[in-house]
Image (tube, helix red, strand yellow):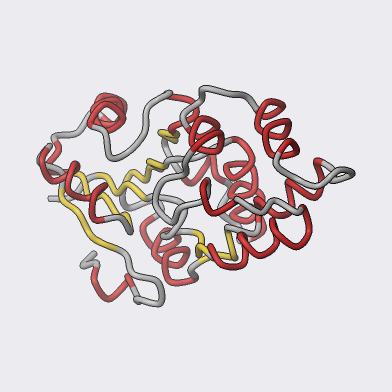
Length: 202
């Protein structure tokens, strides 16, 4: 019996477009070694530190600008960084809409304040205010721990308060799902362009 459904953000609710993001950083900011930092599942270097809550937003921008051509602005860095998130997966959004009020919904995401704000804006436009749609948000930058490490899952389990077997976790990363499974959480792997509603019996 599922009582709670936990969603990853990037790669599930949001489509990820790594090539677009890398290209924009190179062409618009002159950030030539951006591949060393952007990864489809877990970011590296100072971007990884930003998502782990080890540096704040100002430090993130300062680090990004130090890799960019002179004259690059914070606004350019912001726009390039946000281009990693390339709109929503509509089937995932419709699933959230269908489950709202029937199950307790949560977010569990390797995330940062910039992306979380963008998610809030996009979901609000679609009639799903983030604080009304999700009971709680378990974000790496706030909890200072990341998937696939077990600590963030244990904090989520404590915050949700259900038995692990009563929780369904939806993520696109096999490594993230593996950790959840080891803790007894039910899982569903999301693939882009998969109609997830057909995989979820509710």
